[in-house]
Each structure stands twice: as structure tokens, then as C-alpha cells.
Image (tube, rainbow, N blue to C red; front, top):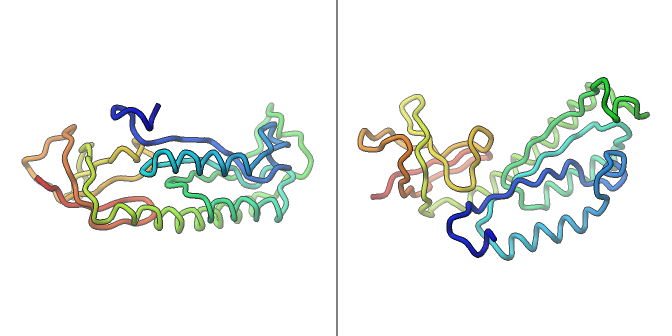
Length: 194
């Protein structure tokens, strides 16, 4: 549907949670990371400009260093534009609360920080593909003398912004063409092109 329609954003949020079969099994989720890789590659082949987001949990009870390494390798090699990373939090009343292999909070935080670092590096590499291109951007607001906008691959409040020089002729809610001039792991910078 996305590939065949112009009125659907080229954006998918797929909550993968982890890429270790044993951790996924403990979570009660699908256990086939290779199938996930094939699906993501199929999506990229059909819609090359799609933005993909996912979220992962680190430090889930029983997660070994080998499990964590599988997740790191996946995030390094997979083309996810936006990645959310959460350290497992033990909550009363959940199935995971009583699982064996609870991981100390400090270790869960270390793993979270490491995965965030890997995800940011990969995200920056992917965002650089936009530099020099003209994107349609919706203007959401302003901050510190800049206009804040989003292109179709940036969800509100979670995926960063396209920063633009403030221009009194541009109104909030307006869709404008923007030449992307810079990128980091979260945001893009651009100049309005009229």
C-alpha cells in the first residue's frame, strides 16, 4: 500500500524488541531474526526512501552478553533510521517480574548506553543520504530563532526535526520545499527553496 500510494508517508515503526532468539522466546515473541532481516530488506527494496523506526529492550531477564552482541550486530548492520532503546524495568504484576536471570540495574544501563551509541552512529550515516536533496517539510513551530519542521520520515516528538532559519513569510503548518544542508544522528538542517 505504501509503495503504490502518494498519500501515505514513507514511514514504518516496527517494534522488534530484540534480535536474540532466546531473548525473544523469553519475551513470548517471534524467534526468527533472519526473517526480520529479509522483511526489512524487502521493504527497502520496494520503497527505497522509507524511514524505518524500531525499539529495543536491553537487560531483559536472562539476556547474556552473546544475546546482547546479536542485538548490537543487528543494529550496526540494519538500516533503521530511528531507534529507541530502553533498559528493562522490573515491574510487579508482569510476566517478566518473576523470570530468573534478573540483570543488575547498572549492567542494564551500560548495555542501553552502548546500544544507543551504536544506533546513533548508524542513524547518522543513514541521515546523510538526505544532504543535498530537496524534501517537503511541514513547519511545526519555532525555537531559539529557528523554525522546526519535519519531513515524512520524522514522527512528531520522537524522531527529531529539520531546523531552518526563521523567516517571517513562513507560517506554522505550511508545507515547504527544503534543501537539506546537514545531518546528525537525530536532526537535519536545511534551507528553504522557493
